[in-house]
View 1: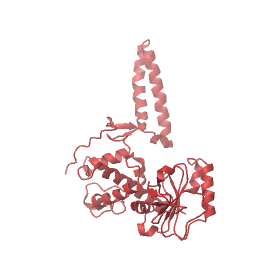
View 2: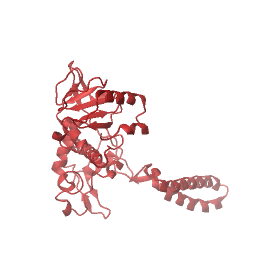
View 3: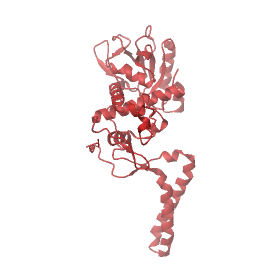
View 4: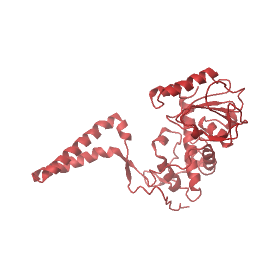
Length: 329
């Protein structure tokens, strides 16, 4: 089935086949070439400005311009019409759970239960399905992922590599699939390395507090947050951290998360099932990043959480110092 055209209203389509990217600059082997290209481009520009007086210099401009372009194209990467689109979901727990359901129905047969490209239909495909837990997933803007989920992909030889799902999934469902893919890839990396990817956001969720008010995790930006999944024998008191409780009732020391999907979404980020995370605890940074988690029986004492909270207040979380609190404990 051919996917219908996808025409987003805003932002408009990116009209070019390439887009600027500084990814190559991070590769030391390319830096000399990029600098050489920039130097040649400046030289060509100077010669062009001088050429009106010394026309013979034009003969030097052409090869210099060609050489500079051949090096500076390292700063360009392939683009899609939605390369610069952003997700409207807010990376919520409900969106991750919805994406998991859509993935199971439409993607799992080829990409596999865990997203590793080893589904039962994988061997029938003209192009092997991608491993959606590999590092390359983080290299693609979510706008590109959205375009490929919507319109499909072709292989380097031009053969169809993946069908598009714009005719089967709503726009919201396609964005939800991308949220699930990121959460699933984060869980896979945690299982492999003991660390989540850098700056990986905790799924957003809403909670009801003892005073009857409601709060979302994203509203607590600027504060470290403690998340506890039911199964813990008592809450960590005295940590001076806002606390969300999943699976319990609001109390003075914790607001109770309302979405049933929150437990499922957090389980995905741990590469576990919802039943397996009973008693788990999470630490979320003031920036909203998942910094660490503890299984039941391995949670830190309240004074440790208090120390972490105080340290988080005193350091810049984007600095290398923040990494000492990241990962799996």
